[in-house]
Image (tube, rainbow, N blue to C red; front, side, top):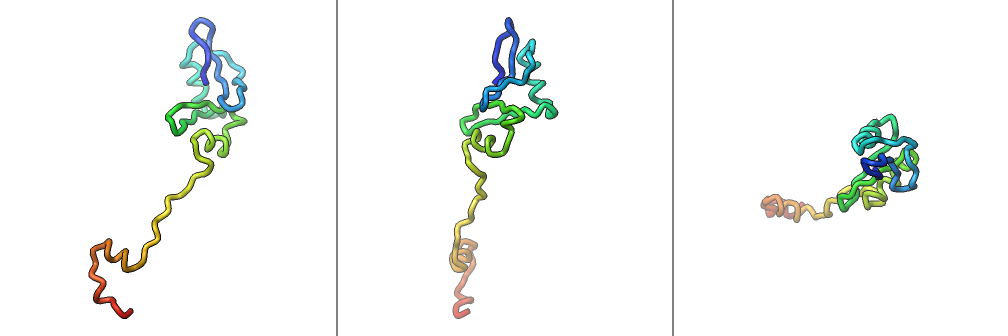
Length: 101
């Protein structure tokens, strides 16, 4: 999270472990720019409820990112298993000519 206010400045804090980046920022947007610089290793992750979380370089790992996104692992969509007759019917084909094969 980017924590703070215009009077006291802002800090970039990891939403997973609580570590900060070690820098203080005058404006909120200075913290955003620091985070966006890929060389710093920070990453923003949006969860399944569309809330944003900030992850430090130590927590910017696939398993942790998946946890924040609300999925333990990415599952590929599975096609339903269908018989040849059912697929032909769905495609609008007349299967009577194939009987006996």
